[in-house]
Length: 246
Image (cartoon, rainbow, N blue to C red):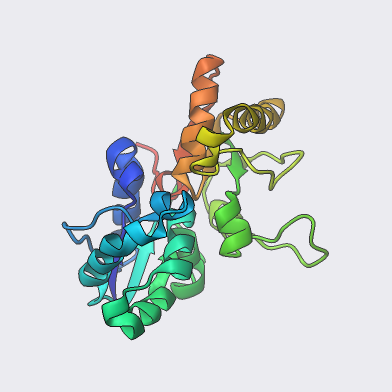
């Protein structure tokens, strides 16, 4: 298979380590992965703010950059969900609608397409998993606690393959962190309070790291952690899955 790696703009600008880890991990697993150099924002910020008409250029460029690939993989549940539900190019409607079905969040791709059962990685720390709302409730990466159904979690399945890791059990495992894209700007006070509650849950469990499939959520939580001068650090799940003792 030929895979295109889509790196969200905020990851590219602020957390390139998550993108590099995603690329290296896919390469280690034998995937023929490519990074189109002309890629840009997927258009989610504009669409979430009510300006979806401004995303047409982003959509057309995305289609141009990734139409040659069998799959498109990204280390961001929120961007993937936006593209799966909203990618549309009027001049190439059928092609853009077909592309929606080729877009996968990283952990979704590892579990559903590669059927990964083993990872050669080690991370000897206490880790709390934050399940971003876009990934959990939008992409179905894990079961929602409010739903009476058998539990599953694709990110947890992968983390459990890591040697020496200690996964902490949170009081509220799938609670929103309060980021919500433009929500954290429009409703700053509510967003911060939700973030503080999310951080406090990890602190009570003695976590060394908070990980997630969404670096946007982690960026929000990192700001709160730094203001509180907390020892807890944030790390994208790809960086843990790709980690080996030196």
